[in-house]
Image (cartoon, rainbow, N blue to C red; front, side, top):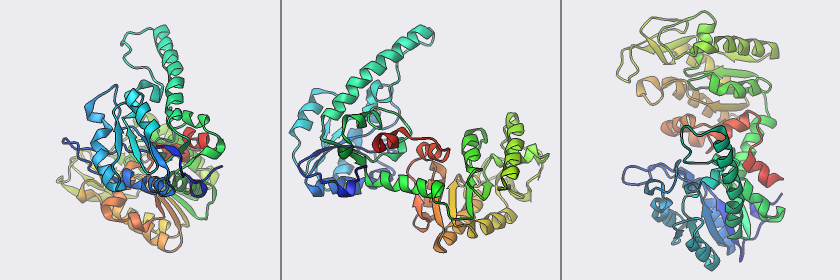
Length: 419
């Protein structure tokens, strides 16, 4: 497989798929440019070699062309980051894109308009009537799949080589993230530096395990993490359950959870997961105490109580001090750590202490030689809020992609390069 550090881009046009799906305020100012900065090493390597760059990305989830999701809003900032005047094609498929890509000179950069302005990027039909028949849906799907081939082929025709540096979309078999790779030889397609780091980090945490291996899984719903939990039960020594989904387990075990989050239709599933953990010798850890509130608010009245004795009208918004100690002690003794999901509503300062304690323990374990991987939107926001990002081994940029990788799924964007 080709690697970016060994590839010489001199005189070549590189199509680079990045994930510049950055948040914008109402005035189209970028509020967090982390994803843009993460792609800089790849883009600067190509320019330093004497290559030119065609950047492809999506922004938001448009259902057609709309100014709100135009990549022109990030053009100025991208130019500043690269210290190069980035050119812009106002249609990734139009005559302007064809002309400007053909005219690109070494050292120049062209940003294509939002790839998702075309249904062919995702390969999903749009504009179907709500009462469309199954036959109409099938015909529309077939039509967009057929036109997707031409869309992909045209994108590929702009460049001599292909670089995928968009781990955040690696779980999607979209035109620019997976399908395009087949138009380039093995020697001319590769991961960018960011994608390489993501792939290595996931591989290390799942396949190069130093024990004890502890996974901390948060989130509000057990149902959204079933496959991940089941896959992890085959790998981890300790599985720490945190966040709102804790109380589905607590209720399943006969606990009183007040108004705390709970999936009543998943109580049997929770018991089944507890049983599987026991059979596999995995230490599945639940909260023993909670910080509860009488309303979902930072200003709500709060108190601590046993996790299985939450009064009616109250709900758990974070773990309690006893649980903090239990979680922290397990984490500090671990050599491989995966953190996906905070312990509570960390956005509320009064209910962020549990997540802070977990993050602090992970940083300490990392200092003592553990490998720690943090991933998932809320976990990343959490470590950034508390300033822990530099204290862990790796912070993943991919939410859904990371979760599917942890589930053990083959990600199309990765497979397309490794083939």
